Amino acid sequence: MRIFLAVAALAAMIGIAQPAQARDWSVYGGLEGGYGWNQSDAVVGAAARDIDTDGFTGGVFAGVETQVSGPWSLGVEGDWKYTDGDDTVAGYNLEQNWTASVRGRVAYEVTPALDIYGTVGWGWTDVEAQNGAGASDSDTLSGWSAGVGAQYAYGEHLFSRVEYRYTDYDDGNFSTVPASRADLSSHEVLVGVGWKF
Image (cartoon, rainbow, N blue to C red; front, side):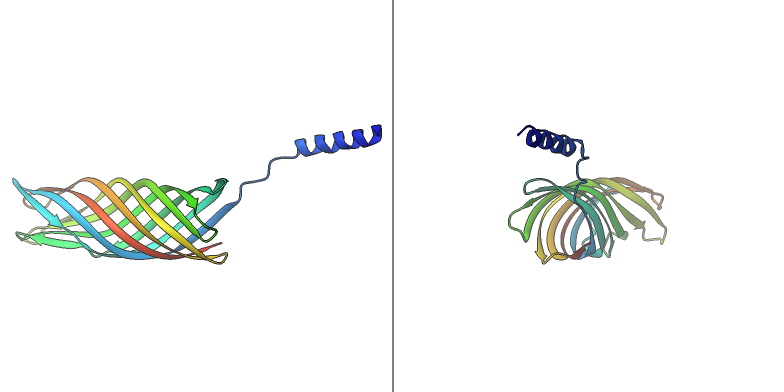
């Protein structure tokens, strides 16, 4: 009996001394595309302009995530997308060329195949302004970005998702003649397909 207790105590001590197992990190990536409703409050000279650079968008995304407690997972994700949004008002044109973001993500497992998630972080976009005389200038705007989505897994690796994201960019300053300033807010609906490695 004493030998049994000694062996049990030794096994328990060995178990306690073992380092904790590494977290189960997953790496994933994929393609996404959709449509953006983008509104800009621009000031051209002394005139205020409401310019809507709506358009299609598409690109790539990648991230890492880990399960932290029960159905909850945390991760970090980045994306880059081309966009063709542009609009011309009173001879003044604003064109949005690309967007990018880095965001944190928290997901909840509704079923083994279905997750819902929220995401928040920081985004960037390249905007080009052109006046009626042909002068143009570009600036990179940045601002906070947040969204919600749902993701469905088809087996261990393949998944698809749908996401809504809002981004509020700061002001951009352009040296067009007359000099101009523009901010931008964006509503995007995105559909993606990805692969979990």
